[in-house]
Amino acid sequence: MRFVPVIFAALLLASCAGQQAPQLQSGTPGTQDIFVQTPGASGANCFAQGEGGSYPVISPGIVTVRAGEKPLEVTCFKGEHMIGRTTLQPRCKSGCGYPATANIPMGIDPTSMQREIIRINQQYR
Image 1 (spheres, rainbow, N blue to C red):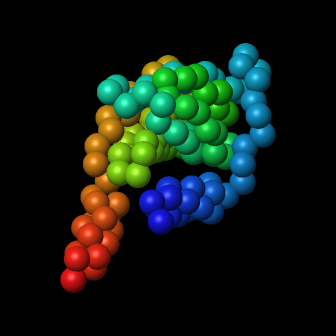
Image 2 (cartoon, rainbow, N blue to C red):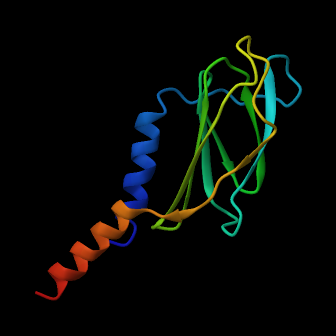
């Protein structure tokens, strides 16, 4: 029962991501490496989602993404209750890339905490 929120989050990310991006090689033309870190929450599972698809990375780590003209959304999860999000804006409108580092502050996910409070209240009724 403890894994239900984790499984739900994984399924939600899989359905939201659309297509899984092909594995990109660092240095390939049109790609960029981004260093993803979650201060105080090493080992978080992160997903960078942009024009080219969804790219997984475990923080701290480097992810290779396709450079695009639209913002790159980076979402990280750790455990059942921690979540962090940030948006990287492209540096120009012609696909020249994103900032080289993504610092994602992690915090308590209020929706997961609400589910936990409801579960505890139902357990002790």
